[in-house]
Length: 443
Image (cartoon, rainbow, N blue to C red):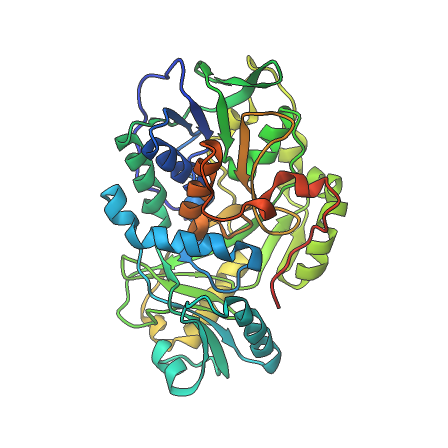
């Protein structure tokens, strides 16, 4: 089955000679950054090597969630939810955002204890999050046969449509003066006197004083060519969607066996809740020490495999000149094959849990590459070694929902405005300054 098709965004025709800021990457982080910068009056060029939202930004689950985040992300996610609530009005387009609530289900006392411990991170924040059980849980998940003892319910949380959200924000960035170029890879950064002075694209040079790298799974490769060490690996997640069906929950659900959320088209997006695939590649060994704490903590949910990704990544150039054809031009859209085993497993589990789904069918499936960091929180940071460069990447599967808030934070950093949240936890230098770097699930 073909992968998801994001709403098309036509490219502007002419590459500008000069702008203040170049944003690299047309996913939810890049387009949100471009929009926020354009709203602040900056001249912005958004460059995407393929199509807007062609990779993980159209392939994720579509969840906008505060629930079960790393505590360090909670303030930024709260900011992002506030943006989502008024985003359609601000951009004049429909992202499909609905504040439907999310339940993280507990079938065992161990999971229930973990959910209760995480819930303490929200004390005093007025989110309405709470543990639910009995009739209230049944009302949220009518007709389920999961046998849940309880669940963590976050009514502030919701969903939006990945295939339309980032394209809508990109168009809004253009409405506010940004230039949007698709099928136009940025090859490298130009420097003068040790700081950013421009970028080289496949269509020519553009002068600028600031660059935001929001390249998702490609960010490490681009940064490495610029001499910037960025520890980042890829994790593959497999997803399916169903045809429209009247039955099924309106509240999104995560459980050990699967995750499900209603779509705007009336169907459901379904995936395994706790299983992802990790392809063993050369970077797996280069970054083994940095990622060891994360692997040790998450080993039950990761499926390591040796696949054709080894050959692909081993054959990629790691350095190049501005005149060279780069890996970004050789692969316009990263379109990995989904795991058929995980597709069958998640679909079977969902139908057992909600028997009404037996009346519908799977109409599409896909996989996406998630950009992950050793501590599973993003890099949102300037770069000490190259003034004028900012990085926003490594969202570790949490990027879609937090994207509008992250875009605002990056724009504030670029414009030297007061940040909406403290960005210290997201600094790039945490990987080199002796900090303890490991995931912190908060329970």
